Image 1 (cartoon, rainbow, N blue to C red):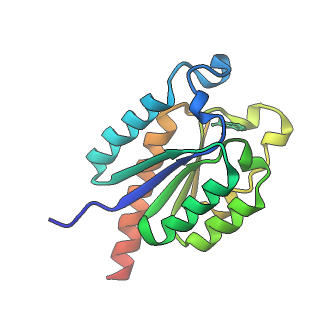
Image 2: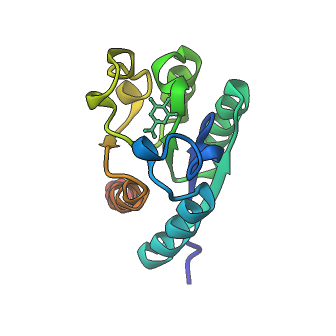
Length: 154
Ligand code: DQA
């Protein structure tokens, strides 16, 4: 049997605080719960997940660069770097992979500085405001896009 495609699920700053930070905004689900949800859904979809979190912008850039060779696609919640990081935008462009951007909260109902994303222009899809379920939806979209890319390559 062919090996399942590897997808990177990358989380940026403060997402390690999920479950504790601003529960009215982000809920009570922890990042460990999100990881377990991703692993369950990925298995159903025939994907293998490499799940990571960092509070450092450069580390996130390095992981996106790594994905160019090591991953079939990327799910990314870049946290606050979404709204500030041209470096992450450039890295995503050079990855040349399907990318699904995820936000747990509905950033469009929040402060206006959260309405702009440097991740979106390099993303093939965006899922916002669906809570932790957004990660599972992102994996489903990514699986579909990876299958589509493979069909085209044949
Ligand atoms: C977030 C939204 C960002 O604006 C914020 O800085 C985060 C989390 C979300 O998942 O809703 O850290 O990406």
